[in-house]
Length: 398
Image (cartoon, rainbow, N blue to C red):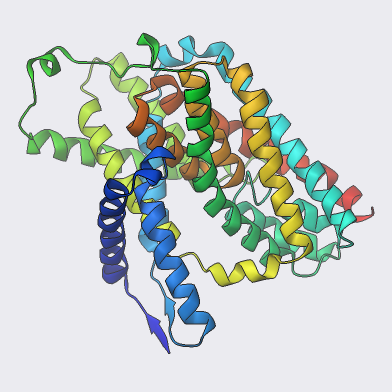
């Protein structure tokens, strides 16, 4: 039986998933210990149940997940709104390190992918489809390159890339938190003064009553800034040979608006924006995870499974043993490792969700929270499509 769930019901079920996830995580210690985001726990539970029902021809649900993309773009606007010029000055060398690690990871993912594809006797372009395009780039980037690979002789590249990206999103949320937790406990890391969230003078006096006017102003400022991201995206889209995601425009819009407002000494509603961003992030995670079609993972059996396991291994190992010391072996660095695994296997929202789960458990990390997602997506979304475009024809002839 096929059932279509409209926008209102999809959003309502997503809200239920968030509440269910909070309930489960609050009562199951292992999820808190391993920093698994609450909507991931309940979202996967819903996905597995629906997968079982679909495979057995009992129920096939078609979601109206319009708010998934909306919430992703609006949330990442809040990431941009937290990116100040002062922070960039503090993280100057770190920005370079993040970019170098990003380039290294993308390159290694494609080398590993092509190697295991050849080893498994499948078309080498499948290695690229399951490599950095699906892992670092995500479902959208893999789908964008699919038709190109199919023209080069790799049948089913689009389906395989989307399935690999789906697999990556799930694994990214499961691996990032535990990796950071391992590093935090091994090196006895704690948030330092440089990682602490800024405390306003009035905050020191106690808890404040909700100011509905300030919350409303913050929310509408956020929506306005997201809208500014549209024209910026259209400008970035003109760059040749680069697959630019819409949310990159939103991130840049946030950066511009925040710094212009600060230069004019305007109120940026920082505290209110933090609250709103939390709500929107959890809504996005819930919609994304619960609407995953896990039946697509059947198509990555056999040789694809070996490739994907190789990608997971190289990403986690690089994050823990190379990125962590390069980032500085601090608490901040451990949080960024969670983010790197999130974006390296899934997408930018996975990175943010992983960092949020670690921060909720162990304490705030300001530079990791604000600086890493923007720099990682900027470096990755520039280098990834250019690199793949340069090597795709050579790989096709291997």
